[in-house]
Image (cartoon, rainbow over all chains, first blue to last red; front, top):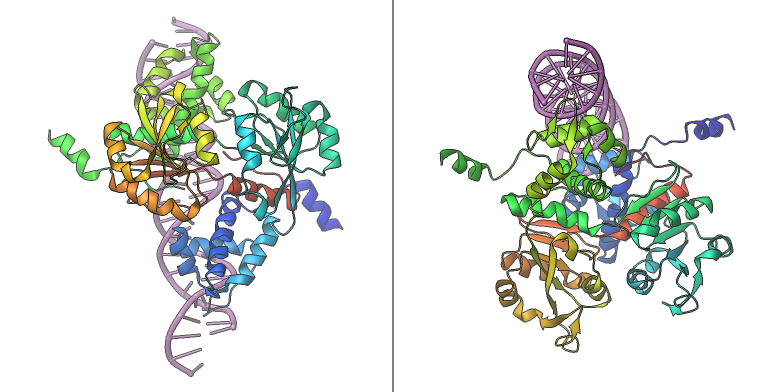
Length: 224
Length: 224
DNA sequence: TAGATTGTTAATCGATTAACAATC
DNA sequence: TAGATTGTTAATCGATTAACAATC
């Protein structure tokens, strides 16, 4: 009791974000290996697939426990399950999509999230001509019902695909509704309280940094 | 002559990738300020907008030159132009989209790239029922004509939106055609020679790292 | 047991930040 | 000139990597 209280005060883990951000890649690689029938993998082999040093893989895993056997390596199925557990990928997460324009439609029709435990359960838009439509098997509801929709469908993650001018407002409303994880598709970094997680999908920034290397005849140093 | 030869041998700048990746964000913020009529900005003000320390902004800029005036700050229009020049954003880049499925269509219809100097000039697909269609104002051509299309339209950047099973093959062909910058939308990290730049847009990885914080009741440490 | 590979500590590397002389 | 802010160096911080004892 005292110790769990202590965790609450600090409100923070010691696991660096950069480590957390690598775990989904480990999950992906391990899933592939499992599908290929590989039973055991060592850090050397994982490192080759992931373009990461074996030392880094072992260090990353060591933040969460001891999952390998000396002299052998890691059981692929076991490590995969452990990492899924750590990342919270053994349960289904209910996701609402706010904004049903071209981009929102593409997201609602994209089948890639569901198999990995992200269930798109609600779609919302402000445009009266869009509200009431069925998109990707979901009825589009008015944003005015945001709070009710989030409660009724037990939504914990929001995908925001509204025009840049409305993004901060929508994000503010989501935060007011208690949403703590937001995937944002607008080319802007919305301001949120520090207990809310926002990730932005921003292909233009990627293009604009690649042109640096094209324009200057350089090669990247091989990052992420 | 000797010194330019030297640059060629090293084939590499000393500017860290992480610095280059911040420049497009500086450009975005400066563009906003310019639109708002702000004429002068100091590193303190820029830092607040970008959530970056003033010291880092000055350090980043110092890799490329001296753009400010002591005691004053930076002229917004001037710094913006310099950064655009450095990033190669003063010219138009011709982009080909490979893969005209749902995602490719969304990209071809997305108006967000063009205003920033990225011109979508060609669309390609393998599916005979898609080839010949007009999407986003472009005639869809067969992937078999990739090399001719790249030459004829002077394409230097490719956006790859094909199913995961075909991604590596398509990327290999693009590399063979001399493409040095690829924006990949498949959930896979294609292998490329080190002089080729690949950036992947992978929303699933973003979702999967956010669930770590949701599942464990933690807050992010505020990264990117 | 001998060989292999983990888990972990210590060393290295590189990026961020603080501090301040230069200078507008 | 006095005040402010840059550009840059040095200090700090944190992440990556190397090395190796533990151990399967």
